[in-house]
Image (cartoon, rainbow, N blue to C red; front, top):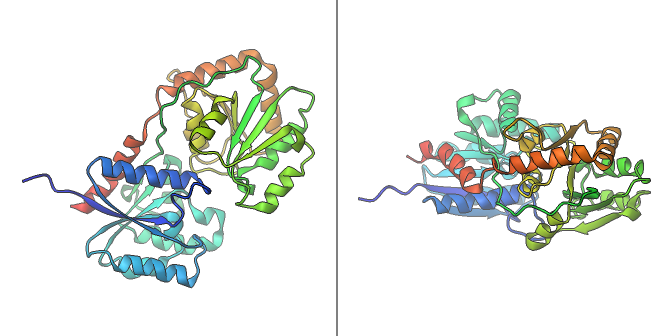
Length: 349
């Protein structure tokens, strides 16, 4: 007899594969589904369209209909974007299914109105998988979850050739949807104090998440020195990294920050805010050297760090060496899928 095949039903946001709306969460979901399948799992995908995490009654009915079709005892991995706003739907199916919530972030931290539902969903799940160790600690603390039921599976990253650096390090890159929580306004305010120095800055990210915010960025006094590149994926995103000396991520919060490891995979140092999971993503070289700079989420701190980067050749060289060394310690998506699989396996038996 052959080895029993584990099966998992994965409930995904409806736009998980939409190339016009890329996100770290969508990439994570896709790579984990593909990785589980490659490692021998039978993966049944169930994309559920809706205005998650603020669903309409129709959205909730659609989710309930999907769950009703699943066989008794099925292991169900639900993207937290869908799950946290549907506590009643999940409570109704929990007695016959084995739900596991994939928490890309804690939505209750961003919107207190979502906390009660998120608490019910996470406490009622058979297990929770978080996309960073920081998020695991935060979930356990925020919702008094049993630590043994919460598993961290940080994102992987694809290997990439080193990006060619310029001596002056003037090419700045930010990869993030144009939305207030990503902190682009802090970056532009910082750059507005550095107009006497040579630099260029490319913002890669969709302006559709918050068009009013994107319009304010385009009206910023320093906007004439900014390239608003829009959405880039595949080769276009690779080209943006290859043309960068420093990745800047000025977010107010990130459970992890996949663009950080995407930059490090190319040996590009990172300037990021010292919030939530970003220090975890940045990590350290084998000798303990941090391959970038971590600063508080304010424009003055960003400006100071950028000035140091742009005016100190020794600092640039140290950070580049650390980024190259950190490159070798990054793990791929197969490792992430294995970690998710390890959390699911006890429930699939």
